[in-house]
Amino acid sequence: MMKTLVNTIRKLGWCIRLYLLYVFFTLPKWRSLLSNGVNTVRPLTSYMAKVVLIMVLVVSVTLPVYAQEILWKELKAKTDTLYQQEQYSEAISVGKEALKIAEETFGSTHPNVGTSLNTLALLLQTRGKYAEVEPLYRRVLKIDEKILGRDNPKVATALNNLAGLFRAQGKYAEAEPLYKRVLKTDEKVLGPAHPNVATALNNLALLYQDQGKYTEAELLYNRALKIDEKALGSEHPNVASTLTNLAGLFQALGKYAEAEPLYERVLEIAEKALGPEHLNVASALNNLAGLFQARGKYAGVKPLYNRALKIYEKVLGTEHPKVASTLNNLAGLFRAQGNYAGAESLYNRALKTDEKVLGPEHPNVASTLNNLAGLFQAQGKYAEAEPLYKRALKIYEKALGTEHPKVASTLNNLAGLCQDQGKNAEAEELAERAKEIRSK
Image 1 (cartoon, helix red, strand yellow):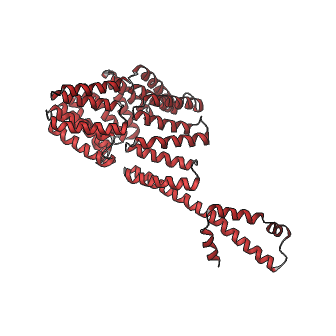
Image 2 (cartoon, rainbow, N blue to C red):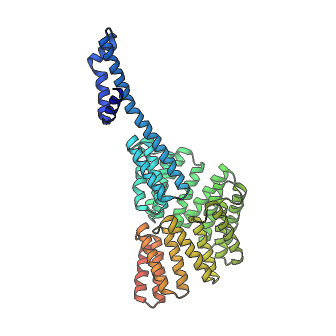
Image 3 (cartoon, rainbow, N blue to C red):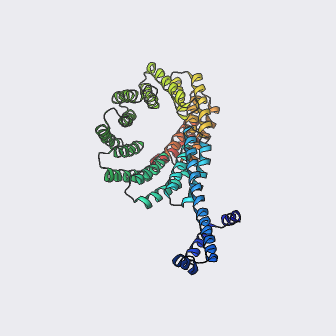
């Protein structure tokens, strides 16, 4: 009988279960029993039956919620593990299921829902699916603001993620007010000398650098560097990060002599603080190699790239986007030295890696396609270069929008190819479109 009763209650909807609880607690006869006591066997039997029924109802309400919460935590942990293993497609699938469970269990505005939304957004952004990311970040922001208020570090993080998405899409005008609000929030809540403020300054400076506002960017980098050195010490990885950004700015301005000691200091900090085989060391090696290559110091470049590649392959495996990026860099060196066969082999390996790990429509794939097309163009292999440029253009337009700077850059590349082939009218049209994008 008890088993039948439990099974029957399980089939009832949540609203009906809760309503039954309300009815039992509010019935006059029930209140009378509670207040007057139980004097006969029949009332006692009735009383016990009601107690059992209520216990079953309570358990039927609370246990499923608890079980769902456990399930959500398991799915969240599995998503995080898959993300760390770069199994992005599987991680996205599990992440979507975790979000569904969170919404059903906790309600659409619960912090756990915000956590699942944020994780899913990060995964989709890794895959270059920017159009799907924005509404998720906006929901996270709305949840955090409702629960925590506008001036909260967690809200600042949500703003920062949304701003970073806009920056990646080239929507600089939309990103800037968000980065400024992050900075203002962190300064107000944490104080002007907090490391989070330095991070906010770095992000805003990077945005300015993207827009060619180099003077403004340099001022922000210097302020961030001063904060980090004072708060964390001169050999902290955060200091190295800011130094990297400042060195990159100097390199973009052609101030190679000023950039080189900064990159060298970054490498020294990373090796000392994190060990010689840390990923940050590989990144520092890549940056220093790129500077040497820009200065024409080819003899010192290859050993740096090779060391960075060795670290990435050892720590991350041979099929990772960072491995592909370093292969691209090394291929660029080979191309500059006239080793076209060596460059082509590396570009193809990088392309294969990115397509497999990130998907065939990721912006990283477009970048490698551009590089490979440029290599073919330099060799006069125009028929092989053209479809690669066009595929890269199509990927950028789909992932980043038709007015992104990378779209303009690819249009210019395609225009140069057309000009090399004597297609002057087509080249002029493409160049004009690129110019329009850059003027906005």
